[in-house]
Image 1 (tube, rainbow, N blue to C red):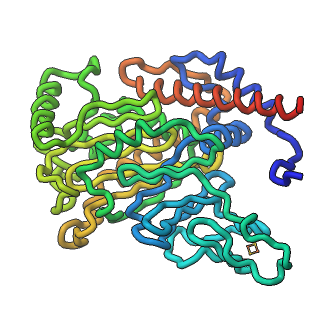
Image 2 (cartoon, rainbow, N blue to C red; image 1 turned 60 degrees about the horizontal axis):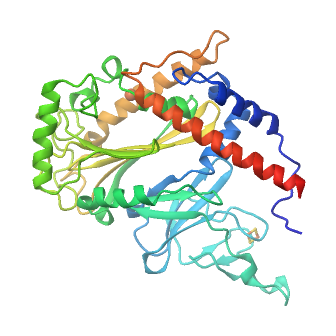
Image 3 (cartoon, protein in one colour; image 1 turned 180 degrees about the vertical axis):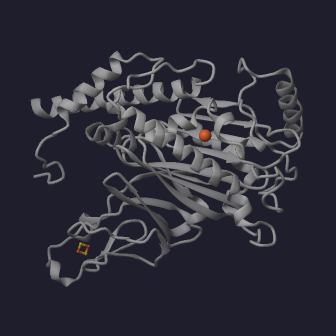
Length: 428
Ligand code: FES
Ligand SMILES: [Fe+2]
């Protein structure tokens, strides 16, 4: 008997059907119906169909620099461990002991020689093989039957991507491009200068929607607008000639320095583009001056603007000349989301000499908190009986439209696969 598939059946089956129906019938230029933002069943479906199937950014390779370094994360109900094994290889596993299922690594990060379960000390190699289970298991016990369950993992451009899916979506073309765009940064020789974790009382999609438009920027983000230019596309109908000239001047310099900058898109899931910051500023700091004296990798010119990397469902990034910022979004419940922000600098930069953490994080601490308040107020209004989906602006909110289109397409696709799978199982 395959003991992995025993369950009481799917209590979410009716909710899945209703979710698919709502997505098929939605008005594509309006925000989603209320249950998408506040229903616990729909939240569970989001976790199963999006966060347990898509590629997620688990962290940065520089966070697990050498053999035995690990980091852990929690994706819905699923604890995961990412560990650096022999010859620099990055492995990912379900952080679940094959004995009686205890969580194996309990710290957020650390360094180990082997992975040892705290419950009865079953011991695993860094590549997941069970090495030791004590003599109590009997003579016919076969260690090889109880390796840790692997999680798909890929690395590119200093990022670690994981997917819990049996068959994760294609991502290699994006990863090759990401590698190319991150080359100037020498990501193996960077470090996380500081990391913050922000809890927001809002559905994860509201956090993403808020990030995908700058319609709200002028009313909410004075610190960010010291340096950020609202548009990230010269084809944006709002873009002025002055902006286009500024982009062209910057692009000519980057071209000469072999710094990748051209817009690269991969469906609606991923995009990379480098855009200049406001004229006269080089970094997202309060005064627009460098936040770290040492530039990253092989970069010579501090004026690299910001390379923006989008990875749906849950990450946006700003890579400047002196530092970069990685944001990841982790759904906790229907109306609770965790946002982590990491500021990275080159490894040999010295705190207090080359950079000051308070100065480095100032702009995005303020911006994150402003965005938190906006998302929470958005959630409060959506919870009202008066809420009904409202129209997106095609000019200002095309990024939100793209995100919701991507989400809807993935949900329908993944729900469809699921129902086909269930049908097949019940016929068989
Ligand atoms: S549950 Fe891990 S050793 Fe028993
Ligand atoms: Fe914002």
